[in-house]
Every structure is written in structure tokens, then in C-alpha cells.
Image (cartoon, rainbow, N blue to C red; front, top):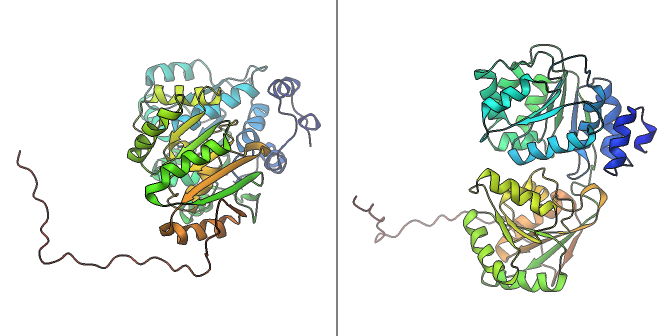
Length: 396
């Protein structure tokens, strides 16, 4: 189905043509009519399937400019995702007079409040900053018709569920709720049962958690040879643009220092970098000015790096969800991509879980390991020896 087949306002169709949005993705086809009808929806879909536009296009369509108030509220877990979301809404609304705006921490609350008072139709927010505004300003949510909770499972992981419930409690009038989540842990299910009215559940990609246009490559190595294996792969594959994930800042910093010698444009991003620097790095990556980005899981959720051809798990992901979110940074919106995961013998049990849970077809870069007879690793039960003495704290 094409966007021109929908009964959208001419200026929205013109904007969609400007940004080359021609055909609807499956998640957009499934959700559009229900969002426009005011139905509460729970959406689970493969990452990179076009969920942001699935929400943004109907929201812009439904704005009533005779109301001088916030009519749609979108809650997201991170600043980067908030900026990405508002930019996409702005692109879709570029030929209309619909005004989107974003609020997040680390920026002047007075300036944000002033902007809202001058007229905002669609507000994108992170939980902490929105609560600050509710407590300290006269911001009103009484005209919000649609509330969107995006990346609900990440809200849970980041400890935002209490904040989310407080914000929902401020929406005491009738409204539509749209919940988007890549996975559905029990706490998110409880949230949905409590606050959504007879929700319609839309689950796309059943039996195929990861994008179907994504190839999953796996390469066995040894810990001491991990860097050597990565460099050899980069030389052979010659990715146009790659994101390389590490499990910690320390690991990412160490890897970046090695890669910088071979790839001068390589950059590093993690939660310890200040907001303006992070935003600049994300923008440069999208503009293809950065070919190799070393990252922690900060970059693994929801962010759209359209041109990334490769995602590489330098450190094995902490769990199956982390694998899904990391590898979802490539092969977005039907494009092709490759995910390479380096693993050692100690990762075999978790590797089997990743393959089985995500129902993926592995492509082995080297000998295929025997995963059928792998047992769950036991936690160490060794006790300290009698001669063991803990280190004393240094005197101040």
C-alpha cells in the first residue's frame, strides 16, 4: 500500500513525498486505521520496521489547529530517541502548521516552558524533564488526546516505570494510549492491563524477532585474539559504516584507542560523554562523516542509523534482548544489513539462547560449534582459601 492510497491531508502527502516515504511498512498498514479510530493499541514489531512514522503520521493528521494546546504526548526513555522522534515528526509536518517540540534534561527548563506556552501541538518528552515541568510550571496536559509510550521495555530497564505511572495519572480525562515495545516483560504487561482500555495487540514478525533483511554472522575467537579477529574481519568485509558494541565504557575506550590507529575517523560514544557531544556524534554518523562508531548499549535502543551496513558485537551481548536491540541498528526499513557477533567457548550457552530465542539462521564465519550438547555454566562455588585475606582500605 502507498501513502497516496490513504485519506491524508494533501500537505502531509507532499511532505511524505519530500522525504521519499512512498510505501507503507507492514506495521504502518496494521496500525494506521486503528490509531485514527482512537483505539488503544499495544504494538510489538521488529526493530527498524517504521514504528516512529506509524505513530507520527496519524498524530500530525489528527491535530486540530483550532485548539491551542498539547494534543499528543510522546514519552521516550532517552534524549537521543526524543530528538530523533521530534525530527521525524517535524519532517512529516514540514508543509503544515503543526508544531512539534521536545523537552529533555540538560537544557533550560525556562526556555522549554516558554516554547510550550507559545504553542505546541505534539510534545515529545523524557520522563524526568516532563515531571519537572509538571511540578514547576503551568504546563497542561488536559487536552492530550493521544498518549504514546515508546520503548516501554526500556522504560522498565531504566527504572522509569514509577515516573511513567505518575505521568499517566496526570491524564485524568478520556484519551487514547499507544504502547510500543520491542519485548513484553511482565511489568510492561501489567502496565498495559492497568492503563489501556480494551487494547488491540498488534504483533508483527511473529516467529522472526529480528529483521528479515538482516544476516546474522558469528565468528568464534579467543579472548586474547578478539581484537585481531575484529581487524581481520574489517579488512575483509570493508563495511561502508559500522557500529561496534562493547559491554562497558572501559572496554569501549580501550577498543577505540586501538581502532583509531587504523581508522582515523573512528569515534566513541557512551553515557559518560556530555549531551552536546553525543548529539553531534549521532548527527555526524547519520551524515556518513563517521565510518566506525564504537558504542556501549546507549546506542542500541530505538535510534535510527539508516546507513549503517554492519553491527558488530565485539563483546557478547548481556542477554537475548540486548542482541535484538543492538543488531536492530542496521537492516532498517527493509534495507539489508549484516550483524557479526564475536564469541568464545564461554559464550556458547548464551549463543544458543540468542539463536533459538530470536529464531535466526546463523551464518558461521569459520567452523560451526556444537551447540546441542552445551550445558548451562555453573556458578562458582569455590570458597576463599584459609590464607586469603581481603585487601585493607588505604588510610586517608
